[in-house]
Image 1 (spheres, rainbow, N blue to C red):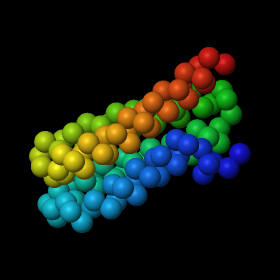
Image 2 (image 1 turned 120 degrees about the vertical axis):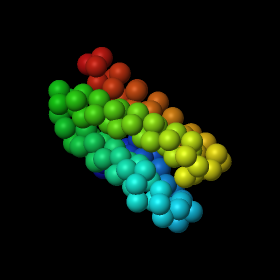
Image 3 (image 1 turned 135 degrees about the vertical axis):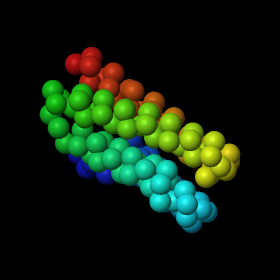
Image 4 (image 1 turned 180 degrees about the vertical axis):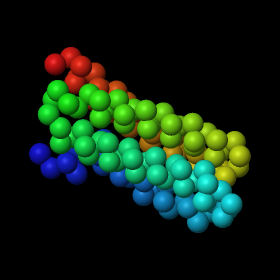
Length: 116
């Protein structure tokens, strides 16, 4: 199995590329604080998904739960970015849409891992 063909990895990769594309539209003040934290959280999420894809069935669940935690943290950080006006509503909604889709995929993966 090619890890880069996993739909949740592809979607997370797309999230990072979209997020990165918005970077220059964010003020310098926000870019090196909240925005940087969001970016690092997305990279952590990518890393955890890749890790989970490589682990044995028994070891997957902790990595998936860590991914879920990162995703929830990202939701909070993005909401803060919107509320502090570091990012506009339209961009926030688009990113949130991608995050929701990743959340559904992750939830399904966690459920299927628990059911085994």
